[in-house]
Length: 251
Image (cartoon, rainbow, N blue to C red):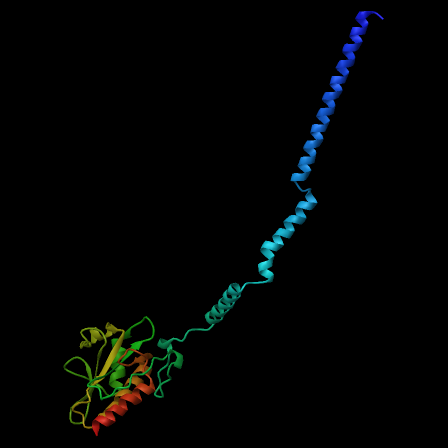
């Protein structure tokens, strides 16, 4: 064999061996990378199963087994919703009758019973809504109930001896009512005040009975609300307490 041909054959064989080694190394490296990827990541099915397990464990467990705090919160929310469905009692809408339709007990403040007869008994009648009483209606109602419009520009209950038994004034300053017809028609006020002074009255209990009856009838005529001296809705209990103190005062 020619030396030149032998040398070419040796070189070609070496080149083939080197190429084979490179290809083999490349294939091994690629396989190693695929193995690493398989170790680091789940396939689609495995990933979905793991996610579902973690979701149920983290989010569904509290729903299935609520904590004590959550149970209390749910109970409180339910109670609040029930209370919101119950209409609130409205004192201003309570109808006042001679029998005194009193507000429900749970909304009523404890009555402070007078230990002695008050020097002045003061009740008032106010409007139920936003519209004030008109002067013409006030004059007509009070005159029908037998009260007289006096020189002091307020109404008074006058006895047969021309003594004042009790008086009625406007609830707003200066407390007087207009005297001119044109002024009366345009006059408005949110309420009127009734007041009596037991001192100097020989029959203060009888005057008080007439006083209360007049107030209740005026409130019915004007569709108003009767308030006591505390500006609370007048109750039969308060009337009885004041009357009893006047009885003791007159003894």
